[in-house]
Length: 287
Image (cartoon, rainbow, N blue to C red; front, side, top):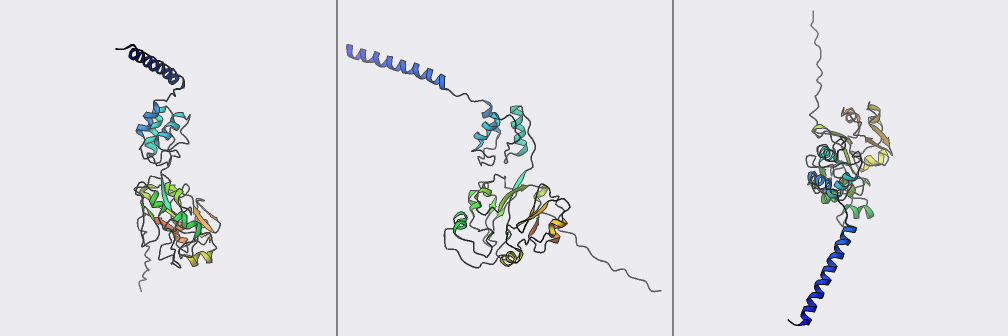
Protein backbone atom coordinates (compact mmCIF):
# COMPACT_ATOMS: atom_id res chain seq x y z
CA UNK A 1 0.00 0.00 0.00
CA UNK A 2 1.51 3.31 -1.04
CA UNK A 3 2.12 6.12 1.39
CA UNK A 4 -0.47 8.25 -0.45
CA UNK A 5 -3.29 5.82 0.22
CA UNK A 6 -2.33 5.48 3.88
CA UNK A 7 -2.18 9.25 4.23
CA UNK A 8 -5.61 9.59 2.64
CA UNK A 9 -7.17 7.02 4.94
CA UNK A 10 -5.69 8.59 8.04
CA UNK A 11 -6.78 12.08 6.97
CA UNK A 12 -10.36 11.01 6.23
CA UNK A 13 -10.55 9.11 9.52
CA UNK A 14 -9.33 12.16 11.41
CA UNK A 15 -11.86 14.42 9.67
CA UNK A 16 -14.66 11.95 10.34
CA UNK A 17 -13.72 11.64 14.00
CA UNK A 18 -13.45 15.39 14.42
CA UNK A 19 -16.84 15.94 12.74
CA UNK A 20 -18.44 13.32 14.96
CA UNK A 21 -17.05 14.95 18.09
CA UNK A 22 -18.23 18.38 16.96
CA UNK A 23 -21.70 17.10 16.09
CA UNK A 24 -21.96 15.38 19.46
CA UNK A 25 -21.21 18.56 21.42
CA UNK A 26 -23.50 20.63 19.19
CA UNK A 27 -26.32 18.13 19.69
CA UNK A 28 -25.80 18.17 23.43
CA UNK A 29 -25.81 21.96 23.56
CA UNK A 30 -28.91 22.49 21.41
CA UNK A 31 -30.92 19.38 22.21
CA UNK A 32 -34.54 20.00 23.15
CA UNK A 33 -35.87 18.16 26.15
CA UNK A 34 -39.32 16.68 25.62
CA UNK A 35 -41.42 15.68 28.57
CA UNK A 36 -42.16 11.92 28.33
CA UNK A 37 -45.67 12.61 29.60
CA UNK A 38 -46.50 14.09 26.20
CA UNK A 39 -46.32 10.60 24.69
CA UNK A 40 -48.42 9.20 27.53
CA UNK A 41 -51.15 11.80 27.05
CA UNK A 42 -51.14 11.45 23.27
CA UNK A 43 -51.52 7.69 23.58
CA UNK A 44 -54.85 7.96 25.40
CA UNK A 45 -56.27 10.62 23.07
CA UNK A 46 -58.66 9.39 20.34
CA UNK A 47 -56.19 10.26 17.52
CA UNK A 48 -58.94 12.01 15.59
CA UNK A 49 -56.72 15.03 14.87
CA UNK A 50 -59.92 16.98 14.22
CA UNK A 51 -58.81 20.28 15.74
CA UNK A 52 -61.91 20.47 17.91
CA UNK A 53 -59.70 21.12 20.94
CA UNK A 54 -58.36 24.26 19.29
CA UNK A 55 -54.94 22.78 18.55
CA UNK A 56 -53.37 21.39 15.40
CA UNK A 57 -53.88 17.73 16.17
CA UNK A 58 -53.67 15.43 19.17
CA UNK A 59 -49.91 15.81 19.59
CA UNK A 60 -50.17 19.58 19.93
CA UNK A 61 -53.05 19.18 22.38
CA UNK A 62 -51.01 16.72 24.45
CA UNK A 63 -48.16 19.23 24.64
CA UNK A 64 -50.58 21.95 25.73
CA UNK A 65 -51.95 19.75 28.49
CA UNK A 66 -48.49 18.85 29.79
CA UNK A 67 -47.38 22.48 29.78
CA UNK A 68 -50.56 23.76 31.44
CA UNK A 69 -50.98 24.36 35.15
CA UNK A 70 -54.73 23.78 34.88
CA UNK A 71 -56.99 21.81 32.54
CA UNK A 72 -59.96 24.14 33.00
CA UNK A 73 -59.61 25.65 29.52
CA UNK A 74 -58.57 22.44 27.79
CA UNK A 75 -60.99 19.86 26.46
CA UNK A 76 -61.01 17.01 23.96
CA UNK A 77 -64.55 17.01 22.52
CA UNK A 78 -64.13 13.59 20.94
CA UNK A 79 -62.84 11.83 24.05
CA UNK A 80 -65.06 13.77 26.43
CA UNK A 81 -64.88 13.72 30.20
CA UNK A 82 -63.58 10.15 30.37
CA UNK A 83 -60.49 10.97 28.32
CA UNK A 84 -59.84 14.22 30.17
CA UNK A 85 -60.02 12.34 33.48
CA UNK A 86 -57.24 10.03 32.28
CA UNK A 87 -55.19 13.03 31.16
CA UNK A 88 -55.64 14.63 34.56
CA UNK A 89 -54.54 11.43 36.29
CA UNK A 90 -51.31 11.34 34.30
CA UNK A 91 -50.54 14.99 34.98
CA UNK A 92 -51.67 15.06 38.59
CA UNK A 93 -54.25 17.74 37.83
CA UNK A 94 -58.01 17.98 38.18
CA UNK A 95 -60.31 17.74 35.16
CA UNK A 96 -63.49 19.79 35.24
CA UNK A 97 -66.46 17.90 33.84
CA UNK A 98 -67.98 19.65 30.86
CA UNK A 99 -71.28 19.16 29.11
CA UNK A 100 -71.06 17.18 25.90
CA UNK A 101 -72.07 19.13 22.81
CA UNK A 102 -73.55 18.37 19.42
CA UNK A 103 -73.73 20.39 16.23
CA UNK A 104 -77.05 21.77 15.06
CA UNK A 105 -77.94 23.48 11.79
CA UNK A 106 -80.19 26.42 12.58
CA UNK A 107 -82.23 26.37 9.42
CA UNK A 108 -85.44 24.46 8.81
CA UNK A 109 -86.18 26.08 5.48
CA UNK A 110 -86.69 22.94 3.45
CA UNK A 111 -87.80 22.97 -0.16
CA UNK A 112 -91.44 22.92 0.94
CA UNK A 113 -91.03 25.78 3.39
CA UNK A 114 -88.68 28.01 1.41
CA UNK A 115 -89.76 28.02 -2.27
CA UNK A 116 -87.09 28.27 -4.92
CA UNK A 117 -87.32 31.58 -6.79
CA UNK A 118 -84.15 31.51 -8.91
CA UNK A 119 -81.31 29.28 -10.05
CA UNK A 120 -77.59 29.58 -9.38
CA UNK A 121 -75.28 28.36 -12.16
CA UNK A 122 -72.00 29.16 -10.41
CA UNK A 123 -69.61 27.02 -8.38
CA UNK A 124 -71.43 24.59 -6.08
CA UNK A 125 -69.67 25.80 -2.97
CA UNK A 126 -71.24 27.62 -0.02
CA UNK A 127 -68.24 29.85 0.66
CA UNK A 128 -68.09 31.05 -2.94
CA UNK A 129 -71.84 31.40 -3.33
CA UNK A 130 -72.15 33.41 -0.10
CA UNK A 131 -69.81 36.04 -1.52
CA UNK A 132 -71.63 36.60 -4.79
CA UNK A 133 -75.12 35.21 -4.35
CA UNK A 134 -78.06 35.43 -1.97
CA UNK A 135 -79.39 31.92 -2.49
CA UNK A 136 -82.01 30.19 -4.58
CA UNK A 137 -84.86 31.46 -2.42
CA UNK A 138 -85.86 34.89 -1.13
CA UNK A 139 -84.31 34.12 2.27
CA UNK A 140 -80.92 35.78 2.46
CA UNK A 141 -80.06 34.10 5.76
CA UNK A 142 -80.79 30.43 5.19
CA UNK A 143 -78.70 27.42 4.19
CA UNK A 144 -77.24 27.53 0.70
CA UNK A 145 -77.27 23.74 0.56
CA UNK A 146 -74.02 23.06 -1.29
CA UNK A 147 -72.56 20.98 1.51
CA UNK A 148 -69.37 22.70 2.70
CA UNK A 149 -70.19 21.30 6.14
CA UNK A 150 -70.53 17.82 4.65
CA UNK A 151 -67.15 18.09 2.93
CA UNK A 152 -65.22 19.00 6.09
CA UNK A 153 -66.82 16.42 8.41
CA UNK A 154 -64.42 13.52 9.00
CA UNK A 155 -66.95 11.53 11.01
CA UNK A 156 -69.77 11.13 8.46
CA UNK A 157 -72.01 13.02 10.86
CA UNK A 158 -73.70 15.22 8.24
CA UNK A 159 -76.21 13.99 5.73
CA UNK A 160 -77.04 15.79 2.49
CA UNK A 161 -80.60 15.34 1.28
CA UNK A 162 -81.63 16.87 -2.02
CA UNK A 163 -85.32 16.46 -1.16
CA UNK A 164 -84.89 18.73 1.88
CA UNK A 165 -82.35 21.22 0.58
CA UNK A 166 -80.84 21.51 4.05
CA UNK A 167 -78.18 19.18 5.56
CA UNK A 168 -78.96 17.22 8.71
CA UNK A 169 -76.62 16.32 11.58
CA UNK A 170 -76.54 12.66 12.61
CA UNK A 171 -76.34 13.03 16.39
CA UNK A 172 -74.91 9.56 17.05
CA UNK A 173 -71.86 10.31 14.90
CA UNK A 174 -71.25 13.95 15.79
CA UNK A 175 -68.24 14.53 18.06
CA UNK A 176 -68.62 18.33 18.26
CA UNK A 177 -65.24 18.98 16.64
CA UNK A 178 -66.55 22.27 15.24
CA UNK A 179 -65.24 21.80 11.70
CA UNK A 180 -68.71 22.32 10.23
CA UNK A 181 -69.20 25.43 12.36
CA UNK A 182 -66.12 27.04 10.83
CA UNK A 183 -67.06 25.91 7.32
CA UNK A 184 -70.53 27.47 7.20
CA UNK A 185 -70.27 30.98 5.70
CA UNK A 186 -73.66 31.99 7.10
CA UNK A 187 -72.96 30.95 10.70
CA UNK A 188 -75.93 28.60 10.70
CA UNK A 189 -74.23 25.81 12.62
CA UNK A 190 -73.60 25.98 16.35
CA UNK A 191 -72.47 23.59 19.06
CA UNK A 192 -75.22 23.07 21.61
CA UNK A 193 -75.42 21.17 24.87
CA UNK A 194 -76.14 17.50 24.24
CA UNK A 195 -79.13 16.44 26.30
CA UNK A 196 -80.00 12.82 27.22
CA UNK A 197 -81.46 10.86 24.30
CA UNK A 198 -80.27 13.71 22.04
CA UNK A 199 -83.38 15.71 22.80
CA UNK A 200 -83.31 19.36 21.81
CA UNK A 201 -85.47 22.44 21.54
CA UNK A 202 -84.05 24.93 19.04
CA UNK A 203 -85.07 28.01 17.09
CA UNK A 204 -84.25 26.63 13.65
CA UNK A 205 -83.90 30.00 11.96
CA UNK A 206 -81.33 32.78 11.57
CA UNK A 207 -83.44 35.22 9.55
CA UNK A 208 -83.10 38.71 11.00
CA UNK A 209 -85.57 40.38 8.65
CA UNK A 210 -88.75 41.82 10.08
CA UNK A 211 -91.68 39.47 10.52
CA UNK A 212 -93.57 40.05 7.27
CA UNK A 213 -90.47 39.90 5.08
CA UNK A 214 -89.11 36.83 6.86
CA UNK A 215 -92.42 34.96 6.70
CA UNK A 216 -92.84 35.71 3.00
CA UNK A 217 -89.44 34.19 2.25
CA UNK A 218 -89.95 31.12 4.47
CA UNK A 219 -93.15 29.86 6.06
CA UNK A 220 -91.31 28.64 9.18
CA UNK A 221 -89.18 31.74 9.73
CA UNK A 222 -88.92 33.31 13.16
CA UNK A 223 -90.77 36.65 13.17
CA UNK A 224 -89.44 37.85 16.52
CA UNK A 225 -92.91 38.12 18.05
CA UNK A 226 -91.59 37.42 21.56
CA UNK A 227 -94.27 34.92 22.58
CA UNK A 228 -91.66 32.24 23.32
CA UNK A 229 -89.63 34.66 25.45
CA UNK A 230 -92.70 35.53 27.55
CA UNK A 231 -93.62 31.87 27.94
CA UNK A 232 -90.18 30.71 29.12
CA UNK A 233 -89.88 30.60 32.93
CA UNK A 234 -86.15 29.90 32.89
CA UNK A 235 -84.88 33.00 31.04
CA UNK A 236 -83.50 30.72 28.35
CA UNK A 237 -84.92 32.72 25.43
CA UNK A 238 -83.85 36.13 24.22
CA UNK A 239 -85.02 38.23 21.27
CA UNK A 240 -82.45 40.23 19.34
CA UNK A 241 -82.52 41.58 15.79
CA UNK A 242 -86.05 40.23 15.19
CA UNK A 243 -84.84 36.73 16.05
CA UNK A 244 -85.36 34.41 19.02
CA UNK A 245 -82.52 32.37 20.48
CA UNK A 246 -82.66 29.54 23.02
CA UNK A 247 -79.67 29.13 25.32
CA UNK A 248 -79.15 25.37 25.63
CA UNK A 249 -77.35 25.83 28.98
CA UNK A 250 -80.50 27.35 30.49
CA UNK A 251 -83.15 25.39 28.62
CA UNK A 252 -85.01 22.75 30.69
CA UNK A 253 -86.71 21.13 27.69
CA UNK A 254 -90.18 21.99 28.97
CA UNK A 255 -91.25 22.65 25.34
CA UNK A 256 -93.78 25.32 26.26
CA UNK A 257 -92.16 27.66 23.76
CA UNK A 258 -92.80 25.17 20.99
CA UNK A 259 -96.53 25.29 21.61
CA UNK A 260 -96.80 29.09 21.46
CA UNK A 261 -94.63 29.68 18.38
CA UNK A 262 -97.01 30.89 15.62
CA UNK A 263 -94.68 30.01 12.74
CA UNK A 264 -93.38 26.65 14.07
CA UNK A 265 -89.81 27.91 13.84
CA UNK A 266 -89.02 26.30 17.21
CA UNK A 267 -88.21 22.65 16.70
CA UNK A 268 -88.44 19.84 19.22
CA UNK A 269 -86.54 16.67 18.39
CA UNK A 270 -86.32 13.14 19.79
CA UNK A 271 -89.20 13.53 22.23
CA UNK A 272 -91.98 10.96 22.63
CA UNK A 273 -95.30 11.96 21.03
CA UNK A 274 -97.27 14.47 23.05
CA UNK A 275 -100.30 13.16 24.86
CA UNK A 276 -103.55 14.33 23.37
CA UNK A 277 -106.03 15.68 25.86
CA UNK A 278 -109.50 14.30 25.36
CA UNK A 279 -112.34 16.36 26.70
CA UNK A 280 -115.14 14.25 28.15
CA UNK A 281 -118.56 15.80 28.40
CA UNK A 282 -120.37 15.17 31.64
CA UNK A 283 -123.69 13.46 31.23
CA UNK A 284 -126.56 14.61 33.39
CA UNK A 285 -129.08 12.04 34.53
CA UNK A 286 -132.67 13.17 34.11
CA UNK A 287 -134.86 12.69 37.12
